[in-house]
Structures are given as structure tokens and as C-alpha cells.
Image 1: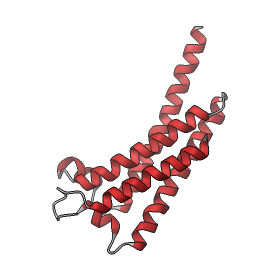
Image 2: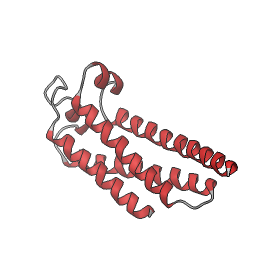
Image 3: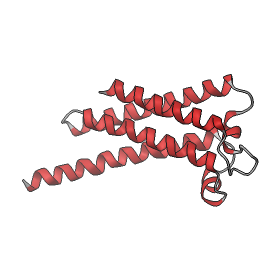
Length: 146
């Protein structure tokens, strides 16, 4: 009984590490696709557009990782690989969706999203579109995983 609990605790930390690594990758994607330093924009300047983009990216990655964990095999190593692969696929597809929106909309989408009114105090309507695209991609990948 105690051995099972210890194995489950170990698996929790292993899946947690993969999930955190994927969310860090999601953070880096937002950092690269938007101008300026993301951390400063959100925590120092209170940029609502940047915060929306990062929050939805993290929720989306979390949803993909959760689905991958729930549907993974009982074999821990196989489950961790599946989780990392599907999480990476989800992030890549979110980047592709963002780039497609960027080429089909006026201006540079990343700049528009983090500087809607010149102060970052407002969220540009396009921010909600990108948020919906991220959540949609997450739902698609989660569906593909299950």
C-alpha cells in the first residue's frame, strides 16, 4: 500500500515537471511573439493584453497536459512521453494559429495585442480572438489525445 502511494507521488512530480516545462515553453512562445519583456509588461506595467495572452496560453497548455495525463498508459515513461509530445504539438499548433491570424490581420498582431491603447491598460478585441484560438486549439489537441 505505501509503495503504491510512493509511486503515485513520484508520478505526480514527474507529470508536474513535464507540465511546468511545457507551460514555461508556452510563456516563451508569448514572449517571442509579442514585443517587449513579457514579465515587465504584466507585473510592472499591468498590461492587460499581455496578461490575457499569457493566461490563456497557460490554461490551454494545462488542458492539453491534463488530457494527456488522464488518457496516458499505466506505464509512467510512456505516459510522460505522450504528455510531452502532445503538449509540444499543442504549443506548435497554437503558434501556427497565431501566425495565420497575424498574416490575415492588419499590422503586427503581437504588437497590437500588448499595446491596444498605448498604455497596455486595455485589451484589444483581437486579444479575445487569439484567446479563443488558443482554447480552440487546446480543445482540438485534447480531443485528439483522448
